[in-house]
Length: 536
Image 1 (cartoon, rainbow, N blue to C red):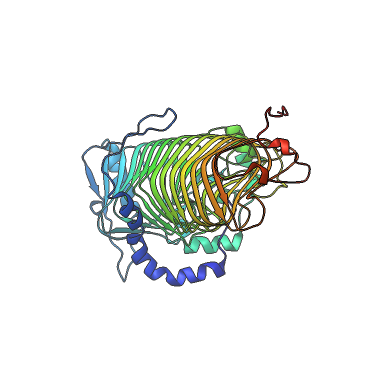
Image 2: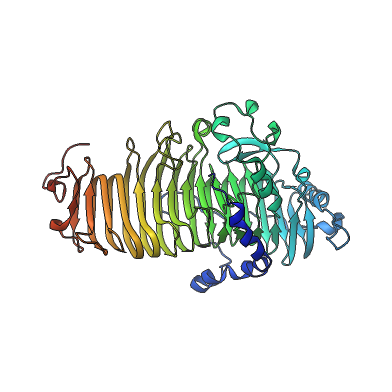
Protein backbone atom coordinates (compact mmCIF):
# COMPACT_ATOMS: atom_id res chain seq x y z
CA UNK A 1 0.00 0.00 0.00
CA UNK A 2 1.21 3.48 -0.78
CA UNK A 3 -1.54 5.63 0.68
CA UNK A 4 -0.23 8.22 3.11
CA UNK A 5 -1.83 10.89 5.19
CA UNK A 6 -0.97 14.40 4.07
CA UNK A 7 0.20 17.09 6.48
CA UNK A 8 -2.99 19.12 6.28
CA UNK A 9 -4.95 15.96 7.10
CA UNK A 10 -2.83 15.13 10.15
CA UNK A 11 -2.59 18.55 11.79
CA UNK A 12 -6.10 18.51 13.29
CA UNK A 13 -5.46 15.02 14.60
CA UNK A 14 -2.22 16.12 16.22
CA UNK A 15 -4.02 18.95 18.01
CA UNK A 16 -6.49 16.42 19.37
CA UNK A 17 -3.83 13.96 20.40
CA UNK A 18 -3.54 15.06 24.03
CA UNK A 19 -7.03 13.90 24.91
CA UNK A 20 -6.93 11.01 22.43
CA UNK A 21 -4.09 9.35 24.30
CA UNK A 22 -5.88 9.79 27.60
CA UNK A 23 -9.33 8.76 26.48
CA UNK A 24 -9.39 6.68 23.33
CA UNK A 25 -7.30 3.78 24.56
CA UNK A 26 -9.76 3.23 27.39
CA UNK A 27 -12.90 3.97 25.39
CA UNK A 28 -12.05 2.00 22.26
CA UNK A 29 -13.03 -1.30 23.89
CA UNK A 30 -16.46 -0.18 25.06
CA UNK A 31 -18.63 -0.86 21.97
CA UNK A 32 -17.33 -4.40 21.50
CA UNK A 33 -17.41 -5.10 25.23
CA UNK A 34 -21.03 -3.97 25.32
CA UNK A 35 -21.89 -6.36 22.49
CA UNK A 36 -19.85 -9.38 23.53
CA UNK A 37 -19.03 -8.97 27.20
CA UNK A 38 -15.61 -9.33 28.79
CA UNK A 39 -12.83 -11.12 26.94
CA UNK A 40 -12.83 -14.75 28.09
CA UNK A 41 -9.65 -16.08 29.63
CA UNK A 42 -9.87 -19.38 27.80
CA UNK A 43 -9.34 -19.61 24.06
CA UNK A 44 -12.39 -21.20 22.47
CA UNK A 45 -11.85 -24.07 20.03
CA UNK A 46 -11.37 -23.16 16.40
CA UNK A 47 -14.03 -24.42 13.98
CA UNK A 48 -13.20 -23.02 10.54
CA UNK A 49 -14.60 -24.61 7.35
CA UNK A 50 -11.15 -25.99 6.55
CA UNK A 51 -8.56 -28.04 8.38
CA UNK A 52 -6.15 -26.26 10.71
CA UNK A 53 -4.63 -27.14 14.08
CA UNK A 54 -6.06 -25.96 17.38
CA UNK A 55 -3.88 -23.22 18.85
CA UNK A 56 -2.77 -22.79 22.45
CA UNK A 57 -0.78 -20.15 24.27
CA UNK A 58 2.93 -20.90 24.56
CA UNK A 59 4.03 -21.82 28.11
CA UNK A 60 7.03 -20.55 30.04
CA UNK A 61 8.90 -21.56 33.20
CA UNK A 62 7.66 -19.85 36.35
CA UNK A 63 10.62 -17.50 36.64
CA UNK A 64 10.55 -13.70 36.61
CA UNK A 65 13.41 -11.44 35.60
CA UNK A 66 12.60 -7.87 36.66
CA UNK A 67 14.40 -5.31 34.52
CA UNK A 68 15.02 -3.21 37.66
CA UNK A 69 17.37 -5.96 38.85
CA UNK A 70 19.43 -5.41 35.72
CA UNK A 71 19.87 -1.67 36.19
CA UNK A 72 16.76 -0.27 34.50
CA UNK A 73 15.76 3.19 35.75
CA UNK A 74 12.55 5.08 34.98
CA UNK A 75 12.38 8.27 33.00
CA UNK A 76 12.25 11.45 35.07
CA UNK A 77 12.06 15.19 34.48
CA UNK A 78 15.82 15.63 34.53
CA UNK A 79 17.03 12.43 32.84
CA UNK A 80 15.93 10.08 30.08
CA UNK A 81 17.52 6.78 31.01
CA UNK A 82 17.30 4.08 28.40
CA UNK A 83 16.40 0.56 29.49
CA UNK A 84 17.52 -1.14 26.27
CA UNK A 85 20.63 -2.78 27.74
CA UNK A 86 18.84 -3.77 30.94
CA UNK A 87 16.02 -5.46 29.03
CA UNK A 88 18.50 -7.33 26.83
CA UNK A 89 20.45 -8.47 29.88
CA UNK A 90 17.21 -9.73 31.44
CA UNK A 91 16.28 -11.49 28.20
CA UNK A 92 19.72 -13.12 28.01
CA UNK A 93 19.52 -14.26 31.65
CA UNK A 94 16.05 -15.72 31.16
CA UNK A 95 17.06 -17.40 27.92
CA UNK A 96 20.20 -18.92 29.52
CA UNK A 97 18.08 -20.22 32.40
CA UNK A 98 15.74 -22.01 30.02
CA UNK A 99 13.15 -19.28 29.66
CA UNK A 100 10.81 -17.19 31.78
CA UNK A 101 9.07 -13.87 32.14
CA UNK A 102 10.96 -10.63 31.59
CA UNK A 103 9.02 -8.07 33.61
CA UNK A 104 8.69 -4.38 32.76
CA UNK A 105 7.08 -3.04 35.94
CA UNK A 106 4.74 -0.12 36.42
CA UNK A 107 6.38 3.16 35.45
CA UNK A 108 7.51 5.17 32.43
CA UNK A 109 10.50 3.78 30.57
CA UNK A 110 12.56 4.84 27.54
CA UNK A 111 13.92 2.20 25.16
CA UNK A 112 15.53 1.54 21.83
CA UNK A 113 14.87 -1.56 19.72
CA UNK A 114 14.28 -4.72 21.76
CA UNK A 115 15.25 -8.13 20.35
CA UNK A 116 13.56 -11.23 21.75
CA UNK A 117 14.94 -14.74 22.14
CA UNK A 118 13.22 -18.10 22.40
CA UNK A 119 11.24 -19.01 25.51
CA UNK A 120 10.80 -15.39 26.57
CA UNK A 121 7.56 -13.74 27.71
CA UNK A 122 8.09 -9.98 27.66
CA UNK A 123 5.45 -8.88 30.17
CA UNK A 124 4.30 -5.30 30.73
CA UNK A 125 2.75 -4.77 34.12
CA UNK A 126 -0.43 -2.70 34.19
CA UNK A 127 0.62 0.93 34.46
CA UNK A 128 3.88 0.36 32.55
CA UNK A 129 4.55 2.58 29.54
CA UNK A 130 7.51 2.04 27.26
CA UNK A 131 8.30 5.07 25.10
CA UNK A 132 10.56 4.18 22.20
CA UNK A 133 13.43 6.47 21.37
CA UNK A 134 13.17 9.20 18.73
CA UNK A 135 16.88 8.72 17.86
CA UNK A 136 17.10 6.50 14.77
CA UNK A 137 20.55 5.29 15.79
CA UNK A 138 18.79 3.34 18.54
CA UNK A 139 17.34 1.07 15.80
CA UNK A 140 20.71 0.00 14.40
CA UNK A 141 22.19 -2.32 13.34
CA UNK A 142 19.84 -3.01 10.44
CA UNK A 143 17.90 -6.28 10.46
CA UNK A 144 16.34 -8.52 7.83
CA UNK A 145 12.64 -7.77 7.33
CA UNK A 146 9.93 -7.38 4.71
CA UNK A 147 8.81 -3.89 3.77
CA UNK A 148 5.51 -3.68 1.87
CA UNK A 149 6.01 -7.18 0.51
CA UNK A 150 9.71 -6.86 -0.45
CA UNK A 151 12.64 -8.09 1.65
CA UNK A 152 15.09 -5.50 2.89
CA UNK A 153 17.71 -4.71 5.51
CA UNK A 154 16.47 -1.73 7.41
CA UNK A 155 16.16 -0.03 10.77
CA UNK A 156 15.06 -2.55 13.37
CA UNK A 157 11.46 -2.53 14.61
CA UNK A 158 10.69 -1.44 18.15
CA UNK A 159 10.39 -5.15 19.02
CA UNK A 160 12.05 -7.76 16.79
CA UNK A 161 11.83 -11.54 17.09
CA UNK A 162 13.73 -13.45 14.39
CA UNK A 163 14.13 -17.23 14.16
CA UNK A 164 12.76 -17.78 17.65
CA UNK A 165 10.29 -20.20 19.16
CA UNK A 166 7.92 -19.96 22.09
CA UNK A 167 7.77 -16.19 22.61
CA UNK A 168 5.16 -13.76 23.94
CA UNK A 169 4.45 -10.10 24.54
CA UNK A 170 1.81 -9.83 27.25
CA UNK A 171 0.39 -7.63 29.98
CA UNK A 172 -1.74 -4.53 30.30
CA UNK A 173 0.94 -1.95 29.64
CA UNK A 174 1.36 0.58 26.82
CA UNK A 175 3.97 0.48 24.05
CA UNK A 176 4.34 3.98 22.64
CA UNK A 177 6.40 4.18 19.43
CA UNK A 178 6.32 8.01 19.34
CA UNK A 179 5.96 7.77 15.59
CA UNK A 180 5.98 11.47 14.65
CA UNK A 181 9.68 11.59 13.80
CA UNK A 182 9.33 8.55 11.52
CA UNK A 183 6.36 10.07 9.69
CA UNK A 184 8.16 13.38 9.11
CA UNK A 185 11.22 11.51 7.85
CA UNK A 186 9.04 9.50 5.45
CA UNK A 187 7.48 12.73 4.14
CA UNK A 188 10.97 14.10 3.49
CA UNK A 189 12.26 11.11 1.50
CA UNK A 190 9.08 9.55 0.09
CA UNK A 191 8.27 5.90 -0.54
CA UNK A 192 11.16 3.63 -1.58
CA UNK A 193 11.19 2.07 -5.09
CA UNK A 194 9.82 -1.40 -4.34
CA UNK A 195 8.62 -2.03 -7.91
CA UNK A 196 12.22 -1.85 -9.12
CA UNK A 197 13.73 -3.52 -6.07
CA UNK A 198 11.75 -6.74 -6.43
CA UNK A 199 13.31 -7.36 -9.87
CA UNK A 200 16.88 -7.77 -8.59
CA UNK A 201 18.49 -9.83 -5.77
CA UNK A 202 18.48 -8.39 -2.27
CA UNK A 203 22.24 -7.86 -2.32
CA UNK A 204 21.96 -5.59 -5.36
CA UNK A 205 19.02 -3.44 -4.30
CA UNK A 206 18.97 0.28 -3.63
CA UNK A 207 16.53 -0.62 -0.91
CA UNK A 208 16.53 -0.11 2.84
CA UNK A 209 18.95 1.44 5.29
CA UNK A 210 21.57 -1.18 4.46
CA UNK A 211 21.69 0.29 0.94
CA UNK A 212 21.66 3.83 2.36
CA UNK A 213 18.05 4.33 1.34
CA UNK A 214 16.32 6.72 3.71
CA UNK A 215 12.61 7.07 4.39
CA UNK A 216 11.78 3.39 4.88
CA UNK A 217 9.98 3.13 8.22
CA UNK A 218 10.13 -0.07 10.30
CA UNK A 219 7.05 -1.83 11.60
CA UNK A 220 6.28 -1.61 15.34
CA UNK A 221 6.88 -5.29 16.09
CA UNK A 222 8.04 -8.01 13.70
CA UNK A 223 8.08 -11.77 14.08
CA UNK A 224 10.32 -13.25 11.39
CA UNK A 225 10.50 -16.98 10.64
CA UNK A 226 9.31 -17.80 14.14
CA UNK A 227 6.89 -20.25 15.77
CA UNK A 228 4.55 -20.43 18.76
CA UNK A 229 3.89 -16.73 19.24
CA UNK A 230 1.51 -14.88 21.58
CA UNK A 231 0.72 -11.16 21.68
CA UNK A 232 -1.96 -10.51 24.29
CA UNK A 233 -3.36 -7.64 26.33
CA UNK A 234 -0.95 -4.85 25.41
CA UNK A 235 -1.75 -1.45 23.90
CA UNK A 236 0.15 -0.08 20.90
CA UNK A 237 0.25 3.65 20.15
CA UNK A 238 1.58 5.72 17.21
CA UNK A 239 3.48 3.13 15.19
CA UNK A 240 6.00 4.27 12.54
CA UNK A 241 4.13 2.07 10.07
CA UNK A 242 2.55 -1.38 10.41
CA UNK A 243 1.92 -2.55 13.98
CA UNK A 244 1.99 -6.34 14.52
CA UNK A 245 3.77 -7.80 11.47
CA UNK A 246 3.95 -11.60 11.16
CA UNK A 247 6.38 -12.78 8.45
CA UNK A 248 7.10 -16.41 7.44
CA UNK A 249 5.86 -17.48 10.87
CA UNK A 250 3.36 -20.00 12.25
CA UNK A 251 1.28 -20.97 15.25
CA UNK A 252 0.38 -17.44 16.29
CA UNK A 253 -2.22 -15.89 18.62
CA UNK A 254 -2.88 -12.12 18.68
CA UNK A 255 -5.51 -11.48 21.34
CA UNK A 256 -7.09 -8.60 23.26
CA UNK A 257 -4.69 -6.05 21.77
CA UNK A 258 -5.66 -2.38 21.46
CA UNK A 259 -4.06 -0.52 18.60
CA UNK A 260 -4.30 3.25 18.08
CA UNK A 261 -2.40 4.28 14.94
CA UNK A 262 -4.98 6.70 13.61
CA UNK A 263 -2.38 9.39 12.99
CA UNK A 264 0.13 7.04 11.36
CA UNK A 265 0.51 6.80 7.58
CA UNK A 266 0.22 3.10 6.65
CA UNK A 267 -0.59 2.30 10.28
CA UNK A 268 -2.06 -1.18 9.62
CA UNK A 269 -3.09 -3.10 12.72
CA UNK A 270 -2.27 -6.82 12.43
CA UNK A 271 -0.51 -7.87 9.21
CA UNK A 272 -0.39 -11.60 8.46
CA UNK A 273 2.34 -11.88 5.81
CA UNK A 274 3.15 -15.33 4.34
CA UNK A 275 2.33 -16.90 7.69
CA UNK A 276 0.07 -19.76 8.74
CA UNK A 277 -1.99 -21.15 11.59
CA UNK A 278 -3.01 -17.80 13.03
CA UNK A 279 -5.75 -16.76 15.48
CA UNK A 280 -6.62 -13.06 15.80
CA UNK A 281 -9.41 -12.38 18.29
CA UNK A 282 -10.94 -9.81 20.66
CA UNK A 283 -8.82 -6.98 19.32
CA UNK A 284 -9.74 -3.30 19.07
CA UNK A 285 -8.49 -1.21 16.18
CA UNK A 286 -8.37 2.50 15.48
CA UNK A 287 -5.85 2.58 12.68
CA UNK A 288 -4.39 4.83 10.02
CA UNK A 289 -4.78 1.99 7.51
CA UNK A 290 -6.19 -1.54 7.38
CA UNK A 291 -7.24 -3.00 10.74
CA UNK A 292 -6.55 -6.66 9.90
CA UNK A 293 -4.81 -7.38 6.61
CA UNK A 294 -3.61 -10.58 4.97
CA UNK A 295 -0.65 -10.42 2.59
CA UNK A 296 1.94 -12.70 1.00
CA UNK A 297 4.53 -10.57 -0.78
CA UNK A 298 4.98 -8.39 -3.83
CA UNK A 299 5.42 -9.36 -7.48
CA UNK A 300 8.51 -11.19 -8.81
CA UNK A 301 10.27 -11.87 -5.51
CA UNK A 302 7.21 -13.20 -3.71
CA UNK A 303 6.14 -15.28 -6.71
CA UNK A 304 9.51 -17.00 -6.46
CA UNK A 305 9.41 -17.39 -2.68
CA UNK A 306 5.83 -18.67 -2.99
CA UNK A 307 4.90 -18.84 0.70
CA UNK A 308 1.15 -18.29 1.18
CA UNK A 309 -0.79 -16.88 4.05
CA UNK A 310 -3.07 -19.71 5.09
CA UNK A 311 -5.18 -21.12 7.90
CA UNK A 312 -6.19 -17.87 9.58
CA UNK A 313 -9.13 -17.25 11.92
CA UNK A 314 -10.10 -13.64 12.71
CA UNK A 315 -13.01 -13.31 15.14
CA UNK A 316 -14.72 -11.11 17.73
CA UNK A 317 -13.14 -7.76 16.91
CA UNK A 318 -13.99 -4.15 16.15
CA UNK A 319 -12.51 -1.57 13.81
CA UNK A 320 -13.44 2.07 14.35
CA UNK A 321 -12.22 5.14 12.48
CA UNK A 322 -10.08 3.06 10.13
CA UNK A 323 -8.72 5.60 7.67
CA UNK A 324 -6.61 6.42 4.57
CA UNK A 325 -8.59 4.27 2.14
CA UNK A 326 -8.32 1.14 4.23
CA UNK A 327 -10.69 -1.51 5.56
CA UNK A 328 -11.83 -3.53 8.55
CA UNK A 329 -10.56 -6.80 7.09
CA UNK A 330 -8.48 -6.71 3.91
CA UNK A 331 -6.91 -9.24 1.57
CA UNK A 332 -3.90 -7.80 -0.27
CA UNK A 333 -2.74 -5.85 -2.03
CA UNK A 334 0.49 -7.87 -1.84
CA UNK A 335 -0.84 -11.33 -2.77
CA UNK A 336 1.96 -12.93 -4.79
CA UNK A 337 2.51 -15.83 -2.40
CA UNK A 338 -1.21 -16.63 -2.34
CA UNK A 339 -3.86 -16.35 0.37
CA UNK A 340 -6.09 -19.28 1.28
CA UNK A 341 -8.18 -20.72 4.06
CA UNK A 342 -9.28 -17.63 5.97
CA UNK A 343 -12.30 -17.50 8.30
CA UNK A 344 -13.50 -14.11 9.58
CA UNK A 345 -16.54 -13.83 11.85
CA UNK A 346 -18.21 -11.63 14.44
CA UNK A 347 -16.86 -8.22 13.54
CA UNK A 348 -18.06 -4.64 14.00
CA UNK A 349 -16.90 -1.82 11.72
CA UNK A 350 -17.93 1.77 12.43
CA UNK A 351 -16.49 4.71 10.54
CA UNK A 352 -14.08 2.60 8.49
CA UNK A 353 -13.20 3.73 4.98
CA UNK A 354 -14.14 0.26 3.74
CA UNK A 355 -15.44 -2.91 5.32
CA UNK A 356 -14.52 -6.21 3.62
CA UNK A 357 -11.93 -5.52 0.94
CA UNK A 358 -9.94 -7.55 -1.60
CA UNK A 359 -7.24 -5.66 -3.48
CA UNK A 360 -4.80 -7.03 -6.01
CA UNK A 361 -3.70 -6.45 -9.60
CA UNK A 362 -1.72 -7.72 -12.56
CA UNK A 363 1.81 -8.69 -11.60
CA UNK A 364 0.76 -10.16 -8.25
CA UNK A 365 -0.33 -13.53 -9.68
CA UNK A 366 -1.04 -16.58 -7.51
CA UNK A 367 -4.42 -17.36 -5.93
CA UNK A 368 -6.80 -15.91 -3.33
CA UNK A 369 -9.19 -18.72 -2.41
CA UNK A 370 -11.29 -20.35 0.27
CA UNK A 371 -12.26 -17.15 2.07
CA UNK A 372 -15.21 -17.21 4.49
CA UNK A 373 -16.61 -14.07 6.15
CA UNK A 374 -19.77 -14.01 8.27
CA UNK A 375 -21.59 -12.06 10.95
CA UNK A 376 -20.32 -8.57 10.27
CA UNK A 377 -22.04 -5.32 11.23
CA UNK A 378 -20.98 -2.17 9.34
CA UNK A 379 -22.02 1.42 9.97
CA UNK A 380 -20.94 4.73 8.46
CA UNK A 381 -18.59 3.33 5.82
CA UNK A 382 -16.79 6.01 3.80
CA UNK A 383 -16.44 4.29 0.40
CA UNK A 384 -17.44 0.64 -0.26
CA UNK A 385 -18.75 -1.86 2.26
CA UNK A 386 -17.83 -4.99 0.27
CA UNK A 387 -15.17 -4.42 -2.37
CA UNK A 388 -13.10 -6.52 -4.77
CA UNK A 389 -10.60 -4.39 -6.68
CA UNK A 390 -8.47 -6.12 -9.32
CA UNK A 391 -6.94 -2.81 -10.50
CA UNK A 392 -5.45 -1.66 -7.21
CA UNK A 393 -2.92 0.81 -8.66
CA UNK A 394 -4.67 1.20 -12.01
CA UNK A 395 -5.43 -0.73 -15.22
CA UNK A 396 -1.99 0.01 -16.66
CA UNK A 397 -0.30 -2.53 -14.34
CA UNK A 398 1.37 -5.39 -16.23
CA UNK A 399 2.29 -8.99 -15.46
CA UNK A 400 0.69 -12.25 -14.47
CA UNK A 401 -2.94 -11.88 -13.38
CA UNK A 402 -4.06 -13.12 -9.94
CA UNK A 403 -6.83 -15.68 -9.51
CA UNK A 404 -9.64 -15.15 -6.99
CA UNK A 405 -12.19 -17.87 -6.30
CA UNK A 406 -14.33 -19.54 -3.69
CA UNK A 407 -15.23 -16.49 -1.61
CA UNK A 408 -18.22 -16.69 0.74
CA UNK A 409 -19.71 -13.72 2.62
CA UNK A 410 -22.80 -14.13 4.76
CA UNK A 411 -24.90 -12.52 7.48
CA UNK A 412 -23.74 -8.97 6.90
CA UNK A 413 -25.60 -5.81 7.91
CA UNK A 414 -24.64 -2.52 6.23
CA UNK A 415 -26.10 0.84 7.26
CA UNK A 416 -24.78 4.00 5.66
CA UNK A 417 -22.38 3.76 2.70
CA UNK A 418 -21.80 5.50 -0.68
CA UNK A 419 -21.34 2.17 -2.53
CA UNK A 420 -22.62 -1.00 -0.91
CA UNK A 421 -21.01 -3.71 -3.05
CA UNK A 422 -18.38 -3.38 -5.79
CA UNK A 423 -16.97 -6.61 -7.23
CA UNK A 424 -14.68 -6.16 -10.24
CA UNK A 425 -12.53 -8.81 -11.94
CA UNK A 426 -9.90 -8.44 -14.64
CA UNK A 427 -10.83 -8.78 -18.34
CA UNK A 428 -8.51 -11.78 -18.68
CA UNK A 429 -9.16 -13.29 -15.23
CA UNK A 430 -12.67 -13.03 -13.87
CA UNK A 431 -13.46 -13.58 -10.19
CA UNK A 432 -15.09 -16.99 -9.75
CA UNK A 433 -17.38 -18.79 -7.32
CA UNK A 434 -18.58 -16.05 -4.98
CA UNK A 435 -21.59 -16.28 -2.67
CA UNK A 436 -23.32 -13.46 -0.81
CA UNK A 437 -25.94 -14.77 1.62
CA UNK A 438 -28.15 -12.91 4.12
CA UNK A 439 -26.79 -9.46 3.30
CA UNK A 440 -28.85 -6.39 4.20
CA UNK A 441 -28.00 -2.91 2.91
CA UNK A 442 -29.69 0.31 4.09
CA UNK A 443 -28.93 3.96 3.43
CA UNK A 444 -26.65 3.37 0.45
CA UNK A 445 -26.10 6.00 -2.23
CA UNK A 446 -25.23 3.30 -4.78
CA UNK A 447 -26.16 -0.37 -4.60
CA UNK A 448 -24.18 -3.26 -6.12
CA UNK A 449 -21.92 -3.25 -9.16
CA UNK A 450 -20.87 -6.67 -10.48
CA UNK A 451 -18.24 -6.72 -13.24
CA UNK A 452 -16.44 -9.72 -14.77
CA UNK A 453 -17.57 -12.46 -12.45
CA UNK A 454 -18.43 -16.11 -13.07
CA UNK A 455 -20.74 -18.15 -10.86
CA UNK A 456 -22.01 -15.52 -8.45
CA UNK A 457 -24.76 -16.58 -6.06
CA UNK A 458 -26.73 -14.01 -4.08
CA UNK A 459 -29.35 -15.36 -1.71
CA UNK A 460 -31.55 -13.49 0.77
CA UNK A 461 -29.98 -10.17 -0.17
CA UNK A 462 -31.75 -6.84 0.33
CA UNK A 463 -30.36 -3.58 -1.06
CA UNK A 464 -31.90 -0.14 -0.57
CA UNK A 465 -30.08 2.62 -2.44
CA UNK A 466 -30.67 6.10 -3.81
CA UNK A 467 -29.33 5.34 -7.31
CA UNK A 468 -29.60 2.12 -9.33
CA UNK A 469 -29.70 -0.81 -6.92
CA UNK A 470 -27.71 -3.30 -9.00
CA UNK A 471 -25.66 -3.31 -12.21
CA UNK A 472 -24.34 -6.52 -13.76
CA UNK A 473 -21.69 -6.01 -16.44
CA UNK A 474 -19.95 -8.95 -18.13
CA UNK A 475 -21.00 -11.63 -15.66
CA UNK A 476 -21.94 -15.23 -16.35
CA UNK A 477 -23.93 -17.67 -14.23
CA UNK A 478 -25.43 -15.24 -11.78
CA UNK A 479 -28.05 -16.67 -9.42
CA UNK A 480 -30.29 -14.13 -7.66
CA UNK A 481 -32.33 -16.10 -5.15
CA UNK A 482 -34.74 -14.10 -3.02
CA UNK A 483 -32.99 -10.82 -3.83
CA UNK A 484 -34.91 -7.61 -3.12
CA UNK A 485 -33.79 -4.34 -4.69
CA UNK A 486 -35.16 -0.83 -4.23
CA UNK A 487 -33.92 2.55 -5.40
CA UNK A 488 -35.08 6.05 -6.22
CA UNK A 489 -34.61 6.00 -10.00
CA UNK A 490 -37.08 5.23 -12.77
CA UNK A 491 -37.06 1.84 -14.48
CA UNK A 492 -36.25 -1.50 -12.91
CA UNK A 493 -33.68 -1.70 -10.10
CA UNK A 494 -31.48 -4.19 -12.04
CA UNK A 495 -29.50 -3.38 -15.19
CA UNK A 496 -27.55 -5.96 -17.22
CA UNK A 497 -24.76 -4.82 -19.54
CA UNK A 498 -21.77 -6.33 -21.34
CA UNK A 499 -21.46 -8.54 -24.39
CA UNK A 500 -20.31 -11.50 -22.26
CA UNK A 501 -23.16 -11.40 -19.76
CA UNK A 502 -25.29 -14.50 -19.73
CA UNK A 503 -27.12 -17.14 -17.70
CA UNK A 504 -28.63 -14.78 -15.13
CA UNK A 505 -31.24 -16.57 -13.06
CA UNK A 506 -33.81 -14.75 -10.93
CA UNK A 507 -35.83 -16.71 -8.39
CA UNK A 508 -37.98 -15.00 -5.77
CA UNK A 509 -37.44 -11.56 -4.33
CA UNK A 510 -38.95 -8.46 -5.89
CA UNK A 511 -37.06 -8.37 -9.22
CA UNK A 512 -39.50 -8.52 -12.11
CA UNK A 513 -37.90 -10.27 -15.10
CA UNK A 514 -39.83 -8.02 -17.51
CA UNK A 515 -38.46 -4.86 -15.87
CA UNK A 516 -34.76 -5.73 -16.03
CA UNK A 517 -32.94 -2.98 -17.93
CA UNK A 518 -30.84 -4.37 -20.77
CA UNK A 519 -27.80 -2.58 -22.14
CA UNK A 520 -26.85 -2.29 -25.78
CA UNK A 521 -26.40 -5.69 -27.38
CA UNK A 522 -27.75 -7.63 -24.39
CA UNK A 523 -30.50 -10.08 -25.32
CA UNK A 524 -33.58 -10.85 -23.23
CA UNK A 525 -32.46 -14.49 -23.43
CA UNK A 526 -29.71 -13.90 -20.86
CA UNK A 527 -32.40 -13.69 -18.14
CA UNK A 528 -33.66 -17.08 -16.91
CA UNK A 529 -32.58 -19.00 -20.03
CA UNK A 530 -33.94 -22.51 -20.53
CA UNK A 531 -30.49 -23.62 -21.68
CA UNK A 532 -27.51 -21.56 -20.54
CA UNK A 533 -25.28 -20.43 -23.42
CA UNK A 534 -22.13 -22.55 -23.74
CA UNK A 535 -19.50 -19.84 -23.96
CA UNK A 536 -17.11 -21.06 -21.27
